Image (cartoon, rainbow, N blue to C red; front, side, top):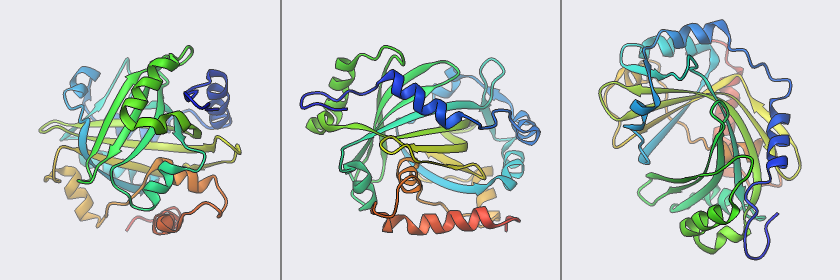
Length: 286
């Protein structure tokens, strides 16, 4: 896909075929339990959410079994609102990650390197809006995200090449599509401080090179996005009450592990894989 001068960031035909394949056969209807839990929260709109954009932030992730979804949403109902647009509260995301042929970004994360990057194209399905995004995890363990709007059907390759090159330098010319990821997201906003919770359901992954796919549809990922240290909230209280600890979980890295054979270096992620197995194999949450 790439050439010596510029990366071909997005082939619309390839992109559509890959993400449609990921969604094929997947149940799109939201369960009554999920709907009921979400409807217990007051709404907020995109303008209100943008007041807490948190492009320079601290991220903490938690992986939970679907069996506790209703309990968690009930615990958060008084302090958090839910993003609502035209009556919709769960939004579909399509993400294409890019990497070098030797998985430079994946290995940087695996090896614990800081000042590392991830490059991705994200499409918000309901609005058909797209952005090329570059995320930096710096040596202070903060996540800094930059992005530029990108047309899903007629991408401006020169504009995107320039943006990514400005972010990561000459490595931009050697990138190619690496992994396709689909999921559904609920976004909560704290009423009292610039803090967001995103809840991701129905994660599906497909390797861009081999077409091998996998999914995590019996867990959900909660990501706490905040400016600084964790403050007391109904969410922190719920975590403490249930003795839930954060987990190191990268959608890109776990998607790569789940769609590749053991030849892909993955020793550092074995504790996460083991924890996922325990969560998905446990009926009651304790």
